[in-house]
Length: 105
Image 1 (cartoon, rainbow, N blue to C red):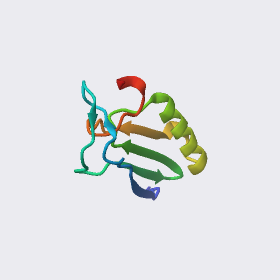
Image 2: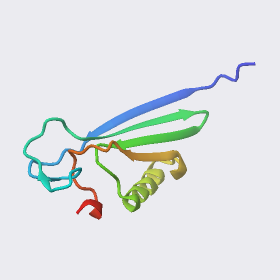
Image 3: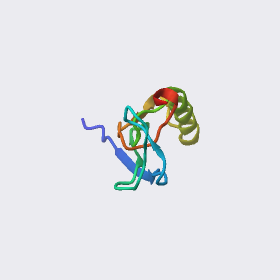
C-alpha cells in the first residue's frame, strides 16, 4: 500500500560579500581584500516531507563561531517553526572570506 509521500523543497541565497579592504581569514599572516573575484553567499535549502522540515544553511566563510551559530539557529527556529535540532549551519571553509571571530586574530 502506497502512503503517498509528499516532498517539498525550497532554496534561497543572499550575497554577503564585504567591501574591498576587508581583513581576510584563512592565512597565517593578515591579508586584506584587494578586489572581488567571486561573491560570497549564504545559501539555504529547506525540505519538508509529511509535516517534518529540515534546513541546511551554508555560509561562504572559513568558520562559524559556535555561540553565534547557536543564536542564529535559535532565531531561525523561532521565525520558521523548524525545530532547532533540524537546522544545520555550516561554513564552506573559504580562505578568502572575512574573519568571523577571535579565533584567528
